[in-house]
Image (cartoon, rainbow, N blue to C red; front, top):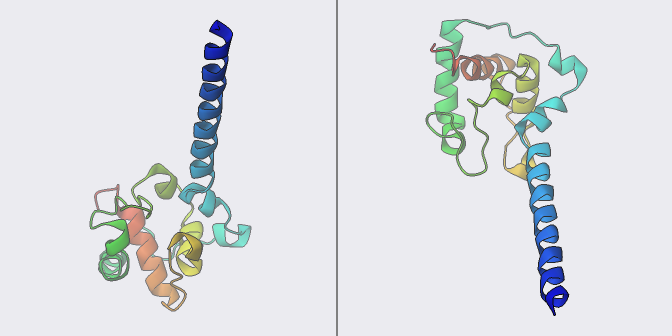
Length: 136
């Protein structure tokens, strides 16, 4: 009788723990860091022509408010499914990877492609995103 009660409960616990571990792994493998790591080498090696340019960061902030804040939040902390742009994964990403992600989007996850914006504006957005945790 003891085995009949304990064994099913033990097996159920193992199944639930396995499912939770698989769900956690999937979320991390599918998050923003995973997406940014898919950027082609040529894109990752691109340099931001506006790096550390305060005027470009200000222009990027205006573009962010117009195109991005409704999903990523006014403070860029992320809302529901949208990435937290202040996260370590985003802040440590190469500028070219961010540029590539903005240009190509992630349609299945709700991130639109911003390929219709000129490169200058995409780089301004990258500059603004880069400035988020730097107090600029």
